Length: 165
Length: 90
Image 1 (spheres, rainbow over the protein chains, first blue to last red):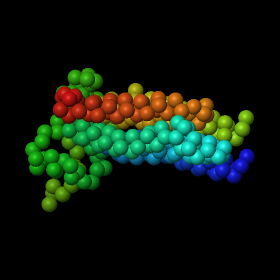
Image 2: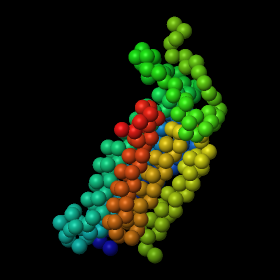
Image 3: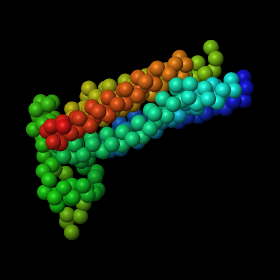
Image 4: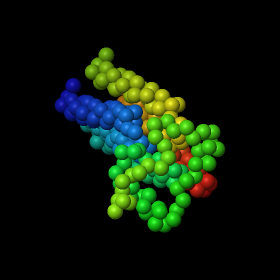
């Protein structure tokens, strides 16, 4: 076992442990957070970082274990894991924040209530100023068949965002 | 059984275990954005499992599957969100 292979092994262990730890942190956030928006905050960032860490670890491990044979060209290009892992990283970095933003926008505009612990709601003030309707609850009714609130709160919540001034 | 095989086996097992609470959240939560969030998290966990399987089997084809899964997950997320906000997909 040469030192290049050991270097690749160290990269593999460090980055894959980082990815698994971030994935479990996102899981705890998904279960424990009270709100759609908080849950989105937890899962989007941590799933990006988890997938990123695991992919970088596998990429560097395969690069160094190919490079061990002295073939730089092969370890960069003929080894499919390195290039395809790079493409996966680019794709995840581009699409995951866009997807999270789209879900948050759709959730707010379909009238999913905020948690009662929310302090500020600047997006709601902005939409009120533009007079954009934020109540499309009939879509939820049509698709799921009920408006039963599973987060333990519902309806209009006093957000305390400076309306009492 | 070398160190790499054992390490990757443990990592794949942990990622598979982490998929079960996501499926439970998908079934339990009622609102549509909650379900979409759970779907997104499940697809990213599956992508991680596929990338780890690529290192386990030393084959690059698993990463193709991960890439296709990422594209499908992004497409489904964006189309569901567009449908919820605008009541039409395109």
